[in-house]
Image (cartoon, rainbow, N blue to C red):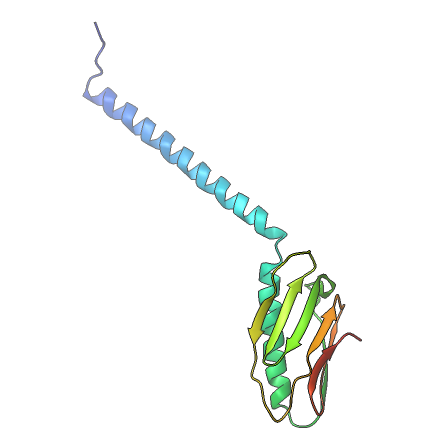
Length: 140
């Protein structure tokens, strides 16, 4: 003969089971979130996005400045020597130091009055951006 739980007992058991399932699901969501954060800590994707956009804004500002401009680009919180920078007609590219990483390009305002010298700078600790008769980047 089976024992049957009365109505109050079955409600209490179902509440405990629902609470246990909620705790297990919450723990799984937390573990998945921590695993995701752990994988992107060493990823340089967000640094490349930041550097390409920041350099594009900097070059746009240098373009609009009158006369000749010499600017030293340096970031304390990001190690620039892990990256390779390319400057092409209307685009700044950032590539990570690891082999096989994709380059991230971001456009900037390009003027035909002041041409851009195609530049490739590998592993600089800071960048020199110069505008005279053309815009170029180089490592000091």
